[in-house]
Length: 78
Image (cartoon, rainbow, N blue to C red; front, side, top):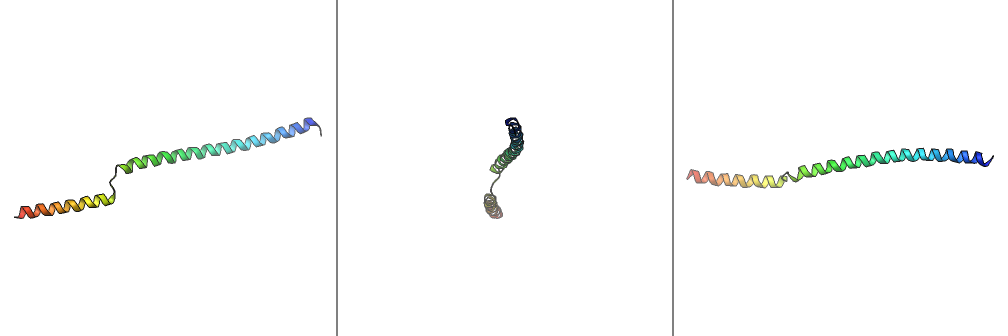
């Protein structure tokens, strides 16, 4: 085996390594893209949720409204 033969073998092996790294890079690009989509979706969900009243707040407001209605009804019946 000559040095030139060895150089060709090494070059071919590095070519295979580069192909594998290219595949790994593509997979990382896909993962990064998926993470960005998840972050964007999470931010949109947070924005929507920040404009929604919590259930206990809604229930509390309903109770207060019912009490006010009862008082008004009592006042009107007198």
